[in-house]
Length: 310
Length: 265
Image (cartoon, rainbow over all chains, first blue to last red; front, side):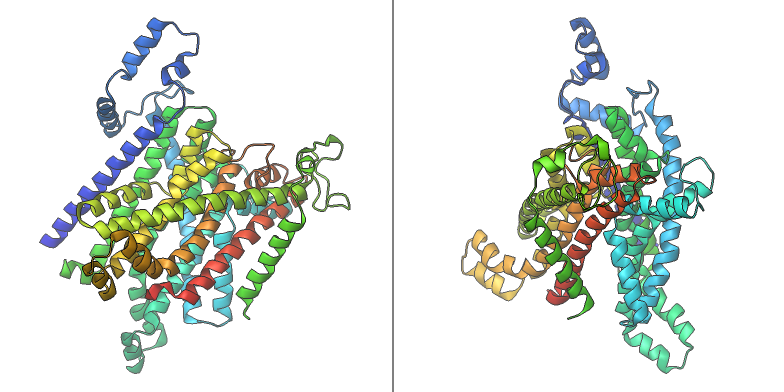
């Protein structure tokens, strides 16, 4: 038990450190914006007095380390400032969009798991047979066809040719189908490769041979002995690969004009709404770091070997 | 010869041939002809015309050339810089290694293409900025790989011997460490090439990358998606072109990895 507490404390600290470095990176990123932010807000014809006043308000007259400190303090208290475009506080808008993205990411994740893991397992069990070739080919296509090609092709197929699914984003559950398929299938390809490799790794272990020699049914060998052991490596890489899903969400949302964080981020770039842009980047990255910390924790609790040796 | 090497050979030969035979004809690429927009493939236009009546085939060829150029520059920089960064971290160890790992972790905390999107969003589009953004993001993979591999080989006997004999650090690294890392690094270069082509296309698709009238695969796919209903051939041919490029590179990477068996290094 004690080792687990130590592990969790350490995980917590490193996560905080990573989050802090993310905030710092975004802070410097925003300083890369060409031109004076005060002039961008007020326009070129602003008077000197006004400029000075806004500069004071935004805290831009302070030395850079104080600006950084204020920035971190603001992020911690979810004070993302006001959007230049909407003239509203950023935080509530972001939150609403975040839920949309979360919905899309979760359904895509389910698609990916439902397609990718079984395909990978079957491919490994039928190693070098036609099923394996089929799965490997699909996985290769999946990692090579980017979602901005797959998305329009799916629209062409399902919405235009067969008119089965809507394209727009305001028709309830049905409109979730195409975006989730687009985002989920490319992630499924990664999962197929991962689970195929993990199952292949345990396939020739001595305990599998032992299980078979004992005369256990093949079903039990596969599900109790093989998959339980192959599952853990899948889990570790899963957390890291979620980044592909979250990054891919930005483009997928842009294709289907899905009202999530990704399309908000791209729109904010067009509108030069840097306040919104940085908040989007921060929230997506925080989610990613959080998911990774969770998978780490989960892994350590699921694998009895680790908690014993720690 | 198995299927994958056959595919690699066919696709690479096809692309190399196409890229050599057809020069980038600036006039044909940018010539706007509003009288025949979104035409189907014909004798005059092998792959039809786009929404401004420009020759899709000519734009595709020079778009691919530009993509390959961007990928070449980016991967050259990221592979060299990332590898040096990783080797240096692992070689020094201790506090420096810790600091370098934290820097790597910071970059890895931004999922996928997000940091590149933010960077190009802030710096603005264009070939130069897209290369800066992709370089800023791409080196991390090489750094992580080089660091992990250097940690593995660092305590090998002949390296210890070289160090004990007083060989200078640059010499040990170039003569003894780099050759041991070459296999996995070559595999990473291939995959990274494919990844950079995809990222560049993704950024251009979002309108953040290469700007009109310069042709880019991503930009053409975006336009093709706009005219999906009227001229489906536009997105199909541009999509297939990008796909075949990336499949070839990915197959090449897979083949190299199996051949060099980078796991056993």
